Length: 240
Image 1 (spheres, rainbow, N blue to C red):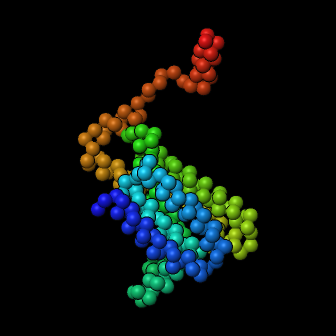
Image 2: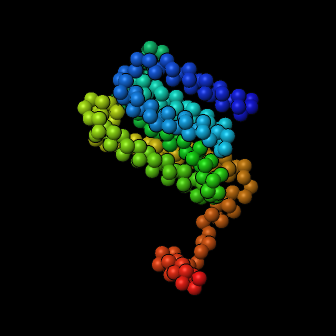
Image 3: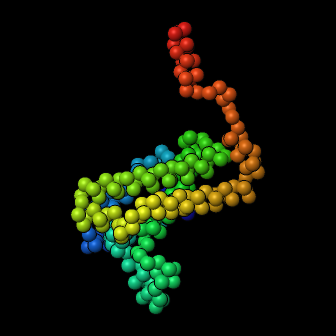
């Protein structure tokens, strides 16, 4: 299947999910808040798909994450009826089977954020910053965790501005004062698993994996930076 056909299929499937769930959401105001970043993400992918096309793997992981986010936006993350759906399908409670005492759909999506977005982030780092070896795995993990923390700050700020029930619905803490910390930890865990899988595949397939890893940790500049580099620049400017 060509890239164009594949991307068109993913777009059609996302639209087929998003359009019905855009009608009669649990809370329309929260739906708009939740979809703001989705609109931004999709717009960015559309704008860059020619100049900077990603791999099918990256587009697929982003698609799955967008689908999960679309479901969460429709119901609000704290009210997604996954347990009821599982009970209707199997006759048993998924929460009871897993020992969950709350609606954990939001936790699943935060974990999925790390698991599904770390690889596209790695692809960007490899192709734009030309990182290699250790840094090709550490930096995607680092950026995933930092953007997860940034999202928690945006979420807190938005909830503080709108206030009331809408703010609480957007936060979705369900009374857990450590909710933000757990969400970030799960995103980091998901990213770590993703990078471990990528590393495992490369260890198996890449002949020079060990050499590239060692080279990425080699010291390339013997002189310190900071005041030393500033002095060099001042000397060069003074002699110009």
